[in-house]
Amino acid sequence: MAKNKSVYVCQNCGAESPKWIGHCPSCHEWNSYREEIVTAAPPAAPGRDAVRRKPELLSGIEANENDRITSGIGEVDRILGGGMVKGSLILMGGEPGIGKSTLALQIALATPGRTVLYVSGEESEGQVKLRAKRLDGKNDRCFIYNETEPESVLTQTGAIKPELLIIDSIQTLSSSMLESSAGSVTQVRECAAMMLRYAKESGVPVILIGHITKDGTLAGPKVLEHIVDVVLQFEGDGNYVFRILRPVKNRFGSTAEIGIFEMGSKGLREVTDPSELFIRRDRDPASGVTIAATVDGVRPFMIETQSLVSSAVYGTPQRSSTGFDTRRLNMLLAVLEKRAGFRLGVKDVFLNIAGGLKVSDPAIDLAVAAAVLSSNLDAPVDHHTAFAAEVGLSGEVRPVARIEQRIMEAARMGFTEMVISGFHRDVKDVPGLKISKVYKIEGLVRLLFS
Ligand code: TYD
Ligand code: MG
Image (cartoon, rainbow, N blue to C red; front, side):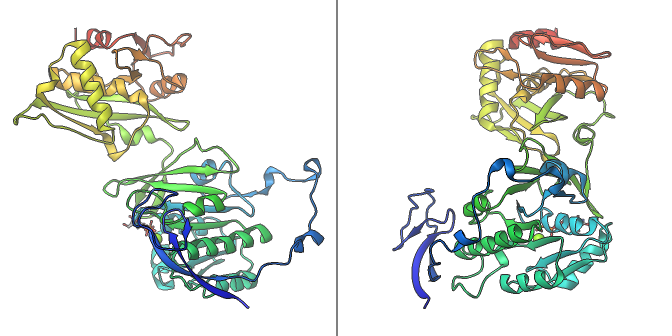
């Protein structure tokens, strides 16, 4: 006989406590405990599996790369490491409206004739159909199922035998076996575990869509991240059209690749040349604008940094940046003030990374410093010049990773000069691109403005 008990579960990390507590000792979240009723399953007979399954010798196990199936979308396959591994559980997280359902539906429609079951707990069949009409793909073996009970889903997978299962979203699933409400940690964890079992037993890849909380983590399910094989994070600014799909965890590939998409009237389009998207070539040179050769994961692209420096009207100068860490900006300003003698302490400084992108690559430092100086002196920097170097506290210009890739990308995009750290050794010249080396921030000033 199953027994009911009530526990308090942290909705952030899944830690349990017999009584309510305000502060989670495990993940340090405040006010995250909620009461949940768990129905304890009768304990499985010990060693039940021992009869069926035995340990196998690793050398005797057969597995090959053909155990992957294509998602039908090049960028998705690439970041997964060459397609979806059979029987894998893929979690795709992102803020509301970012395009998770759209991408999932595009995957469902991408391969004609492939049997796909798309379970939508949020939208009706009609709504999904309306969306599908806007998209390019066409697959007459795509089933849409508006259901929130995992048991019913599994009954249907038995009948339809899909080659791919998509759950939109895991937070809407709720098993009637559990008494806690849909979206609670217990529900999410148990439903995900059911999908995991299905995936492993059937060899069908399962894509779970997960919601994200306002602080950017997957809602509730830190627990989910442990269960699933792959976690993909969908990022982007709702005010801009492009989206980045970033693997946060991948049991079958690297997490260094990123996929870039553009949201348009026909859904998401793959962006194979991101540099084209993030820089403008047709403009006249303007002060305060420079171009950085950045790398995200292993992907190099050029990006525009814009700065505006003006005299502070009020007593306290303003420092504001979008897409770049404000503390890092303050540090760069202090370096420019102390090491290069610019009186930026009395200036308002605004910094913007074009396209609403967030850049954490330290190699963007030099472009930021150059943009600030350019705006401060009101002297444009040639927009055929790219920058890639980190700036240290003592004003030294430091080398960065993957410099060859950055140089190749700059050359490909038609830049004629690239400013890098002088500490890079063996950097080869590229036809048409002059490499300028600077060692200190003063060197940058001399190079650009004298
Ligand atoms: P959606 O996939 O519903 O987001 P999520 O599932 O992550 O909440 O995406 C909704 C947004 O995408 C919505 O703001 C409209 C936009 N969109 C387009 O711009 N073009 C399209 O073809 C589609 C289908 C959606
Ligand atoms: Mg959705």
